[in-house]
Length: 283
Figure 1 (cartoon, one colour):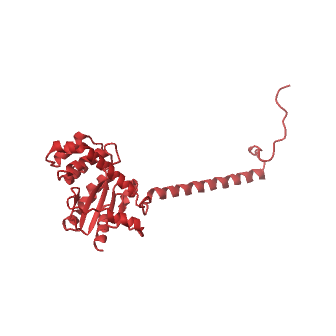
Figure 2 (tube, rainbow, N blue to C red):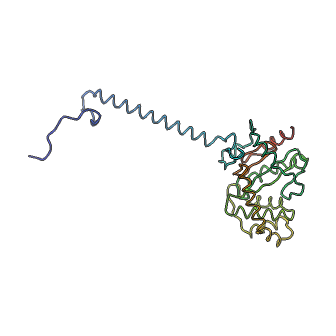
Figure 3 (cartoon, rainbow, N blue to C red):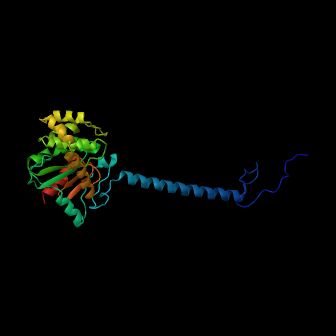
């Protein structure tokens, strides 16, 4: 005698085990039906998964038509490489009165602004929100901005700089250095020196020493004054207030360009920016 249980009838119903058909025996109809149902379920799951992947790919690779709305509905966000390559110059189909007010009020046209270039009476003002540690700001400064020089020289375009220092812990210090250079009339030379040395695929970190070296290469005449201005309480407060102002009007990412009553959200190549400027100059 053994302790093995007596064989019993195989269970039926939903809990019945799936067992192979004995050699030479015809397959059981119920098993065929179960296989068909299983295959249908698998096909449905694959369809759902494929659809989800398509939606996700579309979302990740397609640039948005307008930035996320906030106080002014012009918020910018950091862009993917695909979005940046495609460019972000877009005609906005309709803007609210509040959005138009913000876009039109932002340019100051102050002839004494050391961080502006181009005639104060130019028909087009491009206000640039930027960060010295932002890779797409670096790309814009290296590739796009130089191609706009003729528009500045012929009186069509004026560029006004706005700090939005937030990318790295040393972004505010770099912005403070820009103000210090501007106090001696060398902001744009400093701007060019910093961005020329930056890697458009990285996020550079800055120190007082490295920024002072950039100031020297930019021809800032009084380096001791530059150092003092860079860390002065008024300079620190100015950079902080500039970021707060950007957030209040809905700009939260860089680069962000306001071109008269239109905007460009993120990096765009020179051709796209020139097209936007030319369109506004013709109005």
